[in-house]
Image (cartoon, rainbow, N blue to C red; front, side, top):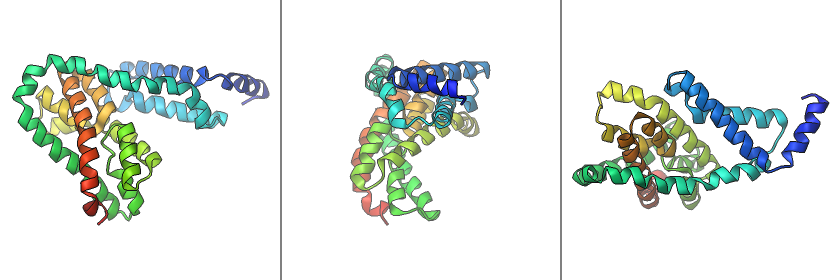
Length: 240
């Protein structure tokens, strides 16, 4: 940056609202680009906004701690936003009751598969035990995943990065997997996406339909609980 711009940035960075403003502007720009690309999954607004924010922080030499002083206000809203997902789910309550047993079986199978497959891939590629344990909860929403990783001996910070990557990859690739497997039921598509790709996948499911989003939200919440219970029990296998 030029000296003049550098002085302006130093002045602005002293305000915690800078992080909030950057976050909102980056996502708004990414969402605009996503719409301009006709909703193509590769133009995922979360991915684009993350890349933009990383580039800005790197170019300006701003620490993450400074940025988060303002971004924490958006972070706080994750809780209320997650609870609000119960509203569209309630509209699907009748079908939810009919699918209760299949969804429960899918939840258990999906949760175990997500943890064991991630650890197996890391082990096959020579990853350390800490890396393997950090990968185990990668399909769970970030706050829960970080708590699980800390409990089982992983690195919460590494887990957070892996969770975001998992969500973005799921949101981008789900369309092609469903097309390959000829999966058309919106409830099935949504539940699978929420189970594998947590909040980012749920946001993508809502772009398809309210029904898909509702079942994705259900899967995201239940998988957080299931993984928190199952991963510690699977530790002998995970550490093997």
